[in-house]
Length: 610
Image 1: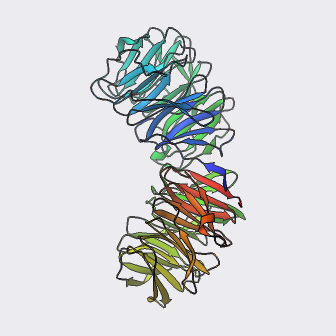
Image 2: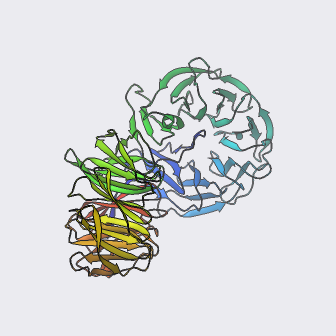
């Protein structure tokens, strides 16, 4: 069996020009955010043990804790709201579709009986409130003509609802049953966020016009605003109140977070400007925030969290992050005597992780091109993607040295390096193989087949090429040429991955028809057969350092580990390892495997003998 040891969670999905929503549970240190079809529940006390809820059929846009903390309501871009249990088996309580389009915000009533949602829809259906157990509508929400970006529920009686959106309006509703009271036309651009103070006396709106306005919580009349002097110089995307209702935290496209003291007359006074550490460029724009008990949390467009202590704002924040897009490659390297995991996502982001600790930094490249193929050898990173180039980048801590590249004239399909022959690399394109030595083309060989995968032996004297026809073509490296030695036929689908074992005596191959095979390198006979337990294409392979275990990751979301001394039927299966499929595997110990996939999460599993 396999035990989950750690999970390195993804970062929230972000979009330039839009704020994101982070929900906290005031009774604990837990918070919620969304990435793709996943809802991520994290605790600041145990960051390596998050829970990922993946039952939505469409990308999730918002999730909120119920007032008692027992339930979570999450909504997606199709207009579906799911209410499910926070603890135990996360049972689904109810599912509704209150809107016909994307839901941008969701709030519980303070008594936990009602839910209000806002977003996009057909006609005038941009806001709806309903009973959480029956789905019965509890009001009529007219007044908006465009997408409604945010909504908020007054946390004290008499209940009120305020909404805001792309029509520059802030609408005020009284109830229940809720009915339109009046519109507030004080903003001159998109109104991105509206939030009631915890004591219900006021609510605040923030907008892309760089203003923050305050209103009376009961009547909806304007009572004050945040001063422009010392204020934000870019769009304000999100706002959150302190637990005592005396301060607010705002975040903006100007890459700063500001803390404002709210006076009794409803005006704001700037008390602190926070500039979180960044990586440069638009990725440092702040798009989300949360004030939870004594903690202040901000989120940047690049997916970086910065955690401050409200009681000591001069202290440097704790910074952590994760991938936003699906992770497609993993590699284990040793730096300063310590093992580290490098992961890449197709948007070109390279992250570094330390087992037992978690996030260790993002490796910054000057040329932030997309990454399809990724290889690490001797302190250097080799990558290739869709720009017809192969890149060699020196690795120095969290920084990259001056990158070199070569244009090979065609899109690379796969990349492999010879670990025992420094500088030797082989890149395959649709119909050929290109031998590189120190990033210089020494040979371009037309193989006459449609190539899908490649592996080079550790010594650099043998190459195995996998084809669309399901055949393995074995070549010897003869100077600057490839000489075909054998053609192996067994697979019934296009080859997707080939890997030599660490001891060099075997290699494994996998195909689109869900089969993997382990071969004896000397005899070219099958070493382990009947590895047919996936239900969809196999995307990746990994060997244990002692060449005793072989793991496969598949589109069926599972990881299967086989032991060479036992029949394939004695496999260890990790079902549902990654929502959407597994795309990266690597071993960090003989019995410890790391997996990554479409959910942008990375997990470490310990293999326990059966």
